[in-house]
Image (tube, rainbow, N blue to C red; front, side, top):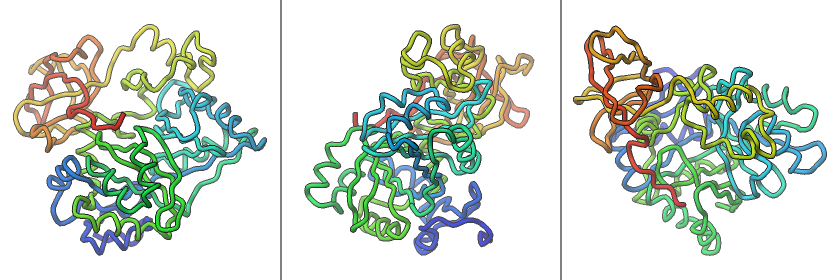
Length: 383
C-alpha cells in the first residue's frame, strides 16, 4: 500500500525496518501489525511487554499568562468535567472535552508537572482540539503544540523490568516506585523524558514522551530485550477492547455523554452538584442531571454466542424477530485472551444489566449476545 502521501511519525523508518505493515490511520502511516501477526502480538503484550508507537497523538503544553501553573488548572475546568485544580504535581488524569449538549468532543489525558500542564489528545481530533483549547483559554493561557516529541507506549507485565533495565539504578528505583497514573521526568540516553504509568491495554505499563530525535534509539534499546516486541494497531485495538476501553469515534463521540458512556467515574465530587466547583464546563446542566436522574441508554459489554465476531455497526434487538430495536454495537472483534468474541455497545437502560440476553443482527442472521460486565480481562494496573 502506498503511504507516501501520509504523515509519518519519527519512528516510520524504524517500523519499516522491523517489517511493519504500514496502513493509513488518522492521516498517518502506522503499522497495523508485524510479521508475527495480531494474535501473537496481542498475547505477547498480555504475557510480556509490547512497544507501541503512539506519536500520532497530539502532545500539548498549556501555560498560564500569569506564570502560575495553578491558573492553568482553573482555566481547563471551563472545558472539562474533571477536577484539575486538585491534580497534584506528578499525577495524570483522564477526562473529556464536552460540547453544549454534554457530548464528547474528545477524550484526553491531563498531566500536571511542577511548572506546567501537559495534554495528550487523540490524533484524529488533534486539530479540532487545539483550536478548541485556544478559543476557550485565550484570555488566560497559551497553547503550544509539541511537534518535536514522539510518544512511545510500553505495555505488559514485563514493562517495568524492561524500562528499568535502560535507566540508571537511581532512576530505575524511581520508576519502580511509581503507581498507576504517576508521572515522572527522567533522563533516557541523555534526553529528558516524561514518563507516565498508564496505557491503553488494561495492562501495567508506561507512556514515554521523548524528543523526536531520541525516539529510534529508545525503541531499539527496548526491543533489544527479549521480553519486548513491537506491536501494531491491530493488537492495540483488540487489547483495549478486552480491557473495556473506549475508542473515540466508535464508542464515544459528540452524540454520547460521559454518563451514557459509563465514564462518570472520571467526574470527581468537586465538579458535581453540591461540589466546590460544580459544573462550569460545556453541557454541565445535562451531564449533572444525568448523574442525578440516570440515562436512557448505557454502554455495556457484550459476549456474542459462537466464535464469529460481531463488529461495530450491528444493531441490537430484544429477540430474533428484529422487531424491538434497543441499541447497537460500537466495537467488536475476537478477544485472543478470552478466546471468544467480545463487543461493546449501547443498549436502552432496561436491558443494561449484566446477564441480560439480547440479539445482534449480523448479515440478516440473529446472533444471541449476553450483556457482560467490563472489562472482559481483569486490569493489571499497578495501584
